[in-house]
Image (tube, rainbow, N blue to C red; front, side):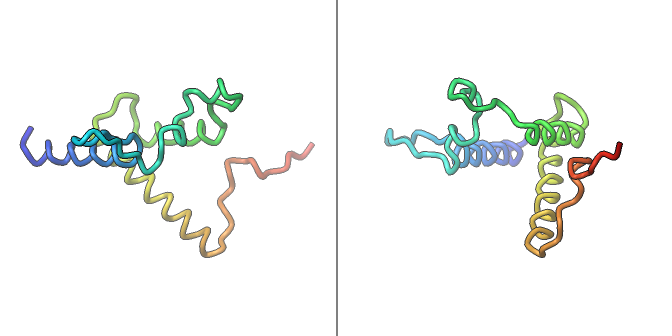
Length: 114
């Protein structure tokens, strides 16, 4: 492993700390994350009477796992999958802002005929 790779990994770790975890500075002060842990972590949700997951989250997770293509991917496959996901999100956002209706949600909007 060469130095630029180590530097890139360090930048990725710094990003996750700044954005999702928070960090303690050398001075001893705690710098809160942009998105605090209790905003995105659902570990204790059931103890607050909240659902642990939602069908939408489970559907996204299954789709993302299919994009990655394996259960224990390399960091590079994972980052490539994140980039693809970001591209999809940007397309959906652009379509939404343009007033286009969302794509069919996998049959959720279909009416069953008897």
